[in-house]
Length: 555
Image (cartoon, rainbow, N blue to C red; front, side, top):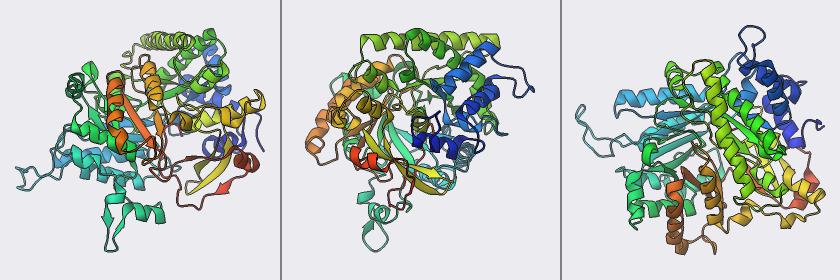
């Protein structure tokens, strides 16, 4: 039975299955536990890190889902372990056997805390190069990513979800061409029966395939920016665009100017760094639940302080992460519910004057309040303050649109892992869409969705480009595209698509695309409104071949 604290059955079920400490805990109690564990006296054993008035207000805004800490904060607060951080950023620092071993060990240590990882392997020499110490030849960096991928396959994060992982390589690396097509499973034969990895995946989604646990991107630097500004589109970039249109991967990681060395990303790519063993520290403000810009400023203020407190209270997997955190103290205050906020005010999915004013408050107040709180404790001020995560499950708990994404679908089938072993699913009508349908009298087919915007990718890219002006880390957002081979996505569209991406590249930190049907195992699948309406409230065990295998930031 649905609890009055949640707007729909799915949110209630996910809270009880994944986050509640016991079957009787309420969301209000969980909110208080989060604030006490991160900002309070921790049951009287430590000095409070925030004033009581601020703690009381913070408990209120979390209980009202106006601020949602990252999923690890929600899960671990009040437990013995305090692994509050969603993800960790790793880098191969030397191309030696010892360094390969060490980065693999670091990956396992991070994954076992429940956090995802991202790994940049660009320093590894290309395959086929001579090895002076052993007399052999280099394997190149891709086998290292395969090793880390298999670590992720066999680590159940926090005992409850699959690993979330990311890997990247510089666009001018000697193995970039191999990297671009490493996940073309439909072209890769397996065994003696002339089957491909795609064939095996269709038969059993649990069948291993190259880098199937890992999202991948190429890193683009100032050399790339110089090339496109002179009117040249590098062949590697065009191939990358072709791959993105067909398979969705590799994505694009953009690092220019004073951020050229910030090639490290977390699993969902919103936190950026140049330092191995840096760490995410995430929480998102629910724009849709806040009515005035004055209230928004207050929520930004206490949320920023909360994340500073998290840098003092979170357990970390090994000493180097602590050292890097003390030096960088990166905060990732994000936004979610953006599309609902726009819809409530009658706006289209695009920047406007009112939103710009709110974003200016977001930028100014997050820095002011975080710096003030750091100064209070004589801490190094953060190197970054704002990062927009995809928000995954926490936006479902809040019954709002995720991150900066438009409504994915009016109705959908949502898969999630239950009891750590078997995927289940429920039919869901998007809470925002349902309100518009029931209260606003809008017909389901009149609500603009990500599927609708798939036909106009420039509108999505431009929106991310505008929002990036107010975000000093990255923005994690997946742009839906029509299926490869369709009228709007085919071989004839590659050059135009490459020019479009190049047009906005200088103002972005990254781009990710998802052509419809390009990969199995996606956690959300659009369904007709009528189908979902008749099956709401029922939990189904997923016996299909499309069970979701990958982790999502925020879960």
